[in-house]
Image 1 (cartoon, rainbow, N blue to C red):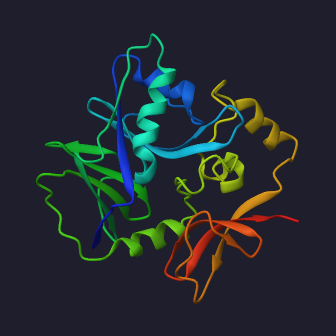
Image 2: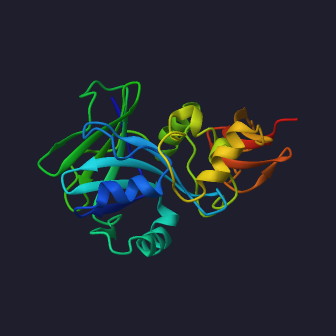
Length: 244
């Protein structure tokens, strides 16, 4: 088993009687019918259908936790409540409360599980996100975060950051192929544009995984061979490239 402390992610909590319905109306996935034992990748879009953030939506004892890029957490924690209106929902940035660990080459519960304030979230083949109290984590890293990032790149999982925010419709980073867009669930911000891109074939750029030897310094948002870098680690990257 390998384990890395993850510093590039933040966490928002969404709680209250209307938390599930609120997230259902905001995100690209069907949160209304999301089982308590399952996490889901999702996008949060602007009215123009561009991704403001990607979330891992995690059912939690007091509602939901949203894992997102750490550099977006403060701004999203301020903007998302603007859409609450009269709903009974509370949103808070809890990035400092939690220690996040990526664990791989490990066996574990195939469902989201919570025990004594600690969470285990399956995210891939023998890969788990572990959430621990920041004041007293029980895990000790055996690898650096880049190793986990490389696994995420190889799994084709995009992470929208401040450098790539508001640039891509969900299909450009393959969210629909990852089950992170539900085209039957109804309205959410940007839904009409996302649906039009899907059914009219208007997506002219797509995210691909590339080998980039000697390009370890590439950062999200940088141009690379006519495309835009989404993520980079270990000489590999995800980039949104023209399809023609």
